[in-house]
Length: 566
Image (cartoon, rainbow, N blue to C red; front, side, top):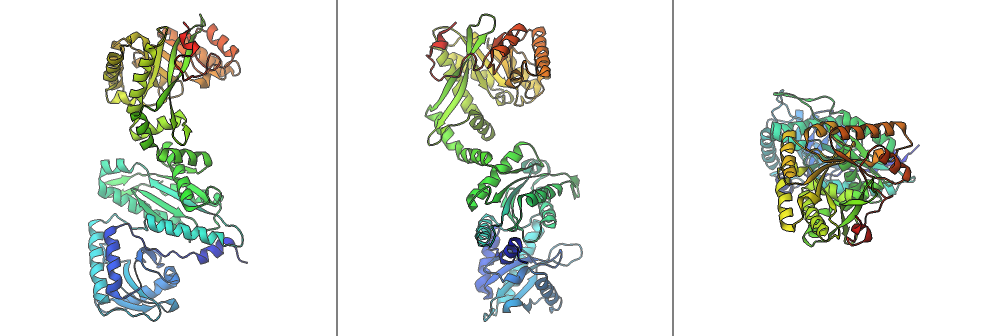
């Protein structure tokens, strides 16, 4: 009985026309008139005898990728005389001429064949054989110079085949699904830096070889460049089956690549989306898979993620964010909201935390964690931090009461040893007394080498500015940072505060942190306080300052009443 999966696989023809090399694409295009054929292809028959199309231009016969066709080609090549091209008839009355592409394989034989094809009634030119041999020799030289490179269909061809999959899936009697898997070789730039480009090419070639061994029949594999690949599963492949395939793909990196210099480990990350559940057209399906891959990469190498609406939406927002964010900085279109900080003993406001916000034209207010994370990834965070620090200090000068102003900055300033010069410059430009400024660095970000971070934080502290670690307990090496760095305050992450009075373990952790801070002469500020019970517990156990919606929500206008309180 017929099934959507089998029907779709029968109808899906992979007529590859793109190449990953402009030069090779030009050679193939010139071969068409030189041979008189309707198509030219580079075939690999080295594995199972079934032709694997590496590069092609022009319409290919449907049966070219069948094992029977591979046997015909191999048999004809074995009977050829000398260096002359071989020829053979193919199913559907096509005819073929070809020659091997000699490589530096150990047995002296080649599994690569450059072929030209003619449809029924067509005729090859008299110079076809010579033209094929010349290009085959050039391809052999290219392979010898770059033995690690393996050619696959490119982005343009991938998109064409993706449209074919969507079109043929929609015509099935029952709605069948298929998946797009976006893969990348993790840490490619690091591999290039450590081992060199040639070694990276060899690893990529071995990755492709292993990929082909686990991909089921009917899959389409292409390269996007830069260590990125795309796999299309045959229509009828469910999400459950795709996840199994993705896990099998990730497992191909479990064995290191053996090279002359030794075994080199590698890993693969994957993001995948399912048509039509995750996206209804080709562009959205690609976008969804890229979004999933981006999320997989954030968790380190060797991970996979399936697309969902939230990931895709966030990726769509950030994919074109850089230009708008740069313009926002240049046009002074960012703004600050203010969160009051309250002394637990006196119940008076002692300071305000500046929270950076941005309303993006056409999109509304963008979630701060989204655009700040993006700014860190693309190297824009210093521009945002400079804007925040300068404008927060200027705003604080207008307050009726000289309260403390707290500003978050990224720890990337520490690695570059540029935080102290920035703070010094801003204080000089604005005239804000140093004692009113508190610089806060999130515990959720790496600080870089501890000696460099200590040196830079000491310089900031020497200016008379207070230092605080934000999101304490939710990031990197908290206790070690308390030991090393010259801190004035730790700001307790809201993850501890929200369970106070409800979870005994949360209570005990909070008590221990407060006790430790007192012994080190460091004050504590608890974030996310939302209930009177939480407030009472923190006050009873010596937490000096608190902030949260119980005490005041973030506000934009710096002249609202709570800013005037002392």
